[in-house]
Image (cartoon, rainbow, N blue to C red):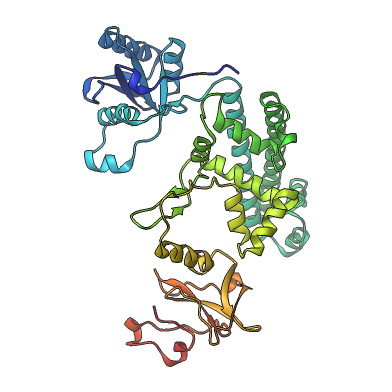
Length: 452
């Protein structure tokens, strides 16, 4: 694959930001200081593309120009392809930040200027994603995702119909697996002499069953094409990497695009949303999970990690070691797919150490989605989760250990509060009253509720 190179925005004399839409494209020329020099709106047609390029060449008057475009894989794809075919340097700009739109407002002209200024501020402009096999793979993935989504919608409709069918037909379909039920519905025949309601019922079941079977066949055919194209683009990738399937490898190739687009492993971690985001300030040194980046790529990497946690020896050994440290499977999966943050060179403080220790020990208490936590407990104490001050407490505080927490014991009773573990059986009928509703906490609930 041919490697593409893009010079830094600082090497260009003028930057042309483009805000793309379905019918029109708005361009703004900015100088080296980010000042808008000229603006133009052109139709999103071949004639409009030629008009934009001729206008830019005339305004540049021989100066070096680089284009900063939004939506290079959406509304701006046609213009990006035209400019690239004419030898222009085209870079990709994501959607502008909302905070800037709130402060300065938004319009096509303002967004075009903002795109040019954003490229000026970037040390490494993002290259436009490639066409050819990569674009063919993207279209196949879109087609398959649509088939899977449509089949899911049809299965939901089928379930809503057969559960209201007459008892003999409902009992016939009740215990069948999902795929077999769809095939059974597709092969139904309406009994002779049936009334209109019965005829329409069978007609609906037959069409939904046939639709599900057809969409399943389409998805399987598209997945075979995807697997073949992935093998041609990256021979041996699926076979060499444990946990990788054709679909995960396809998403990886879609996000990677071509050689030279992703400079380093750190850049790939930011793209995939696996690089921890620093949230440090002053004497506090900590990181949080990255919720940005390519979420489809992040999902593919997560599925690879989950698959390796089942069958990959090295990953299984890693998970066992993390479990021995008191970590959960969710924490192990997140850590195995994340890039570790850079080590701080400054001295660590006791305050920061205590905060990290507290967060690590009580993570599953503050976040009810976790299933295990470290707590002070004795014997076989029954625990339940209640809102409180976020501290794990027991009567004896004898020793520390790991205890399982059932999902059904997580009860969000007070909005915005943190969670505490308290000993005692869970009574589903118990509803602690709040101060606003009863003027105070009832005596029946004070033994199990830790005040926040």
